Length: 366
Ligand SMILES: [Ca+2]
Ligand SMILES: [Ca+2]
Image (cartoon, rainbow, N blue to C red; front, side, top):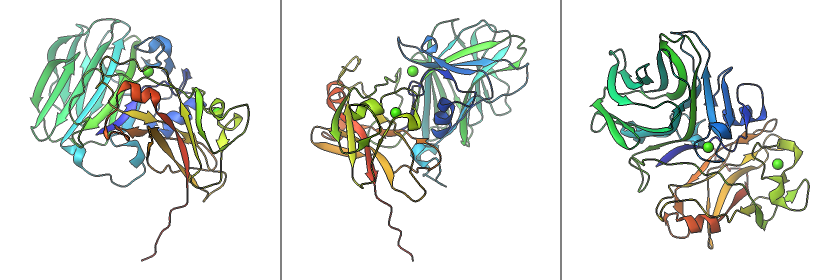
């Protein structure tokens, strides 16, 4: 099951590390952000027009610093005490990255479950597990060229595996990892004296559960789409001539313009019929809908994301809204509700997506 998807596009371009709207949405999606050195821009994205994130290490050697950090759990359960333990058996992390400057020490760029992956001045990748001595895995990275890494934590087979650009670069016995958070980072473990710059794009994470997306996925990317027309309009709008025009900005503009309703069940669905840029018909891993919303006052109604394909709809999870500030959350739809199979690109382009007002939850005292 696909647990997290992050293309960095829907926050817009700018600084995450200052008190901006984008920073708020990044944190609302469960991330911890650094106090400096983290920006998004199309110049840092892997594909044309795609926003990537640039991590700039400005700290001295041997000074650990957390950069992009997030809990290892699906976003809809980020506030729950527990969401199950299936991931403990098999979990994959993957992302595209580019090291944009020649480095002067051992630069760490990924940490999870006691495993630390870094690159040295020889441009080889290194892996360190717990307190073990780090190992040169002999896979050379290239300056200024995008690489794609997948890391597999396989508790059933007791293996840690690292793929670089679809090549099995490393395999080793895995001590039982304890996952709480993962970090995509940019800091020197040893010897760094100058700035290090890493660009990140197209992050995703999945476990071994479910019928699809339960194994290694290989090179994948996140294609971000915004509403370009209305399909179903049951909500009021604050402004303008069409509802979609109020909800189609990259960085959400909060109270500037929006759609709203106080009627349970009221649904707004939007379309974007631009063809999906995919290499084959089974290449879509999931459709992800990312609403941003707030309540008018405490104890008001909630919302969920909705996708509609053909005549069939599917709702995401109930969002836990706040009144004073906006909340954002990703709802992942792995299968097309009209076929109960993988999405195909033409059906993604034909689908509509949006939000629905949910009534209060009835709680029965026992
Ligand atoms: Ca992107
Ligand atoms: Ca808006």
